[in-house]
Length: 379
Image 1 (tube, rainbow, N blue to C red):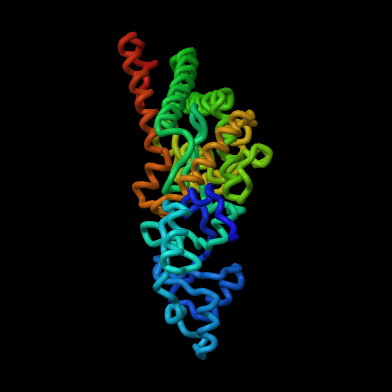
Image 2 (image 1 turned 90 degrees about the vertical axis):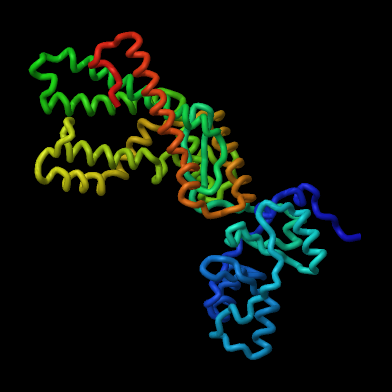
């Protein structure tokens, strides 16, 4: 009696069952395509034209070409099969199996709705779960008051959009509080010193310092660390389990804190608090400071201020977000996001919306309470 595929595997989407198979372009020579298959351990190699799937070459196809005396320098498109079973990432393993039986094919190429190759599914994948799930090469994310948010550009996982709005509102509220505190200090200075360049520079730096200290003090910094650690685990191909994720670094080179550090360095060096260049060379000096120091300063800020060691519960929120992202990525109809989709999935528009809404709400409260003008939100 022949073994029966595991029912749970048949319920998985083809994107989860697919083995990653790097394609070759149709102009690649047969010799180079064969070397590619050996190097990557492929029995079947998808063939693309300008990145879009056009066919596939199998080991028997190479043997046939060799027996027929095909010139090894011939483009692989001349021996590629076009009558290949293709399935979409969101179609189930059961559907793939039925198609294989109906068409008498021993494998299928998983192709997204845009024609990009996701991988190859063979009957063996229907009996045994893949050791490693298909993963995006780069992952972004954000920390929110309701958990970790992650995105690959084309899909997202974890915290909902309104969690990102709450993040923007929380950060805006903290910044308003920091600005209010420094405004109070400014009003305590003698009138002739309140707007001196030294006082304005010091107050600007103090506002920023109060802001990052407050970020470190709230739970969001632990969630931020969990987000980074989960991203590291996904990008390194690690298992998303607590003992692995918990030992990943808290600092990530693509964190928004790094970009904020670069912008802060440029503005502080190039411009006075009034917004005018400090001198003729200040803009150049600001650019140099940002270029050379944005990453070390950003890493310092991440380690000491914008993240802190996460709790076990916060690590779990990162793992849940990672599992959610990978599940969505495996069955995504498009594996390359268009610009609008990438912007929306970045979460930035929702954070900006939350920040603007919180600032406007604070301003309205100040008007109702008749707060004096120097204390009002003006941005």
